[in-house]
Amino acid sequence: MNEAVPTLDNERYRLVRRLAGGGAATVYQAWDARLEVWRAIKLLDARQLSTSARARFEREARAMARLRHRNVLVVYDVVVQGDRPYLVTDLVPGSVADLLAREAALAPRLACRLVRDVLLGLQCAHDNGVVHRDVKPHNILLAADGTPLVSDFGTARLGGDDQAGAVVGTVAYMAPEQRADANAADARSDVYAAGCTLYALLAGREPHEPYAEGATLWERIPEPLVPLIRKATRREPDERWQTAQAFADALTEVEAHLAPTERDLLAVTLDVDSYDPLPPSAAIGDHPTIDQRAERTGAVQRRASAALTVVVFVSFGLAVLAFVGAFWSAVLR
Image (cartoon, rainbow, N blue to C red; front, side, top):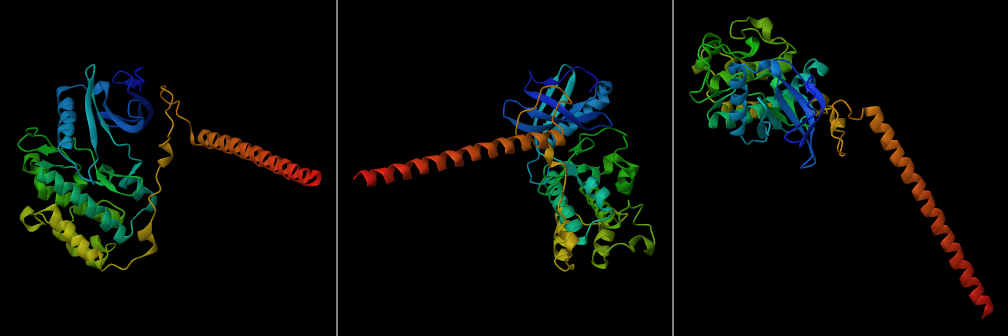
């Protein structure tokens, strides 16, 4: 961050490390000095203080504040410092996009589980009048235990609230009706995007108009999942799963019949080292590196070992003294 603002909210939040940037906002790892926990801070960039950028940021805050579900990223607060708003959320170590970049393609059962849980989070959003409109691997975060969390509601539609004439979303995952008119997007548009996301996780590449492609599109997709993805990505919304819950239920049923593999048990190995239990320095970038944390851990272990050695020797000495005392006591009798 170029500005000399290492803290926010009267020094409650100490910005420690830049996690992600791009678009209109930057995400930082932050220490909540009041509650003594790690958080993520999504801060609107100083160059993005236009009316439209602030409106999108506020839309995201309103959308996420409505939702409480284990598969939706939790927002704890929305604050304005000066003229710059920011969101306070859970600190989550990675995303499905990170996992996909590492693995190239995911095992079928793992991909099904991830997308099924995302659909359950989307159903919660839809039940609360929120249409996401940008479901894709980059917007699905992964908690340390592998739980997927729907995030980034900056393009969400809340009831009738919308940007007139705006084009929102990511083309590879965008339903045809949303490409034509963002105002036309509804829950079935999110179902389409979830189907495209499942395709990307299984095939290792983004789909391109799956409703129009030939048989070669499906060569990398397990046969039992082809009809489910086809139905989710039909051109006409009325021909898709009509709810996220219905798509999730279908995935649950098919998943039970997929042959398990070792890759289904893939550990979600992400950057959980950043969850340092000790409060950081207030200076940005002054957070201990992995090597520094290892050295500090080693020093603690060496001190503990030395203390244990002292305890052993003292205990041994006391035992010897007790034995000698008992011996002479018996002799003098």
